[in-house]
Length: 288
Image 1 (cartoon, rainbow, N blue to C red):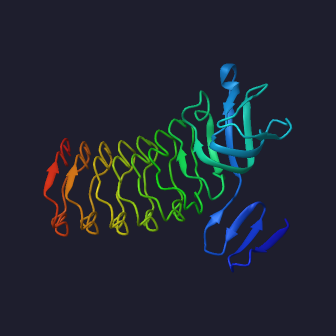
Image 2: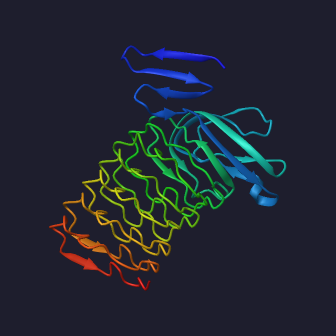
């Protein structure tokens, strides 16, 4: 179980136990890439690694074959038989990408850690239709965008502090769009992401049933809420202060369109949005 304490001389102490690095600033970060796939017969026996961009990793494909040193973006590996495989990679890469490769994502069932190192700049899991669980992303200051990062996945819940450690995140366009199984959002989910400006389609056509009161409380720079909750048919109410902390908000477009279970609107919902001048189809199709 060896535990090793490292100190790089900067006073930032890290503790490594069982391969999981715990930084003294409170971010939990496994430096390695770990995920599980379930492949079947036929062409799906060819798997595309999600390690993309600039790649320098050693991969254990989980099938007993020798570890492979890889510098190719989305490197392929052919399995001899179908089954469940746990893949482990050490090293660095700049993009976690499951779309764009033939069978890269559709058979990934779980991600235990994203890996990639501090240079990881983007995550794209769109198309991981069987992906049911995701971890905290960890300390990744290079990530500025999570556009459609988990769109069309089968995740039913997300870790409370999943996005902690992303101080430069600005764009959450479609981050959980079309996640039918996702029914709730943790309180203060975006608390540490104060640089976000865009929540366009963030939860569109998802299964969420309610909106936490202070979901956007710390995102005062956010100005784009176009279609943020469009098609969320299970939302029946909206917190009165949902946009209270967005003083620069000037317009809303289709934000709650087709939220068919919505039966009423809170009084004073836009009292703090003194610059808000345009509402376009914001509640269109809300027939509840």
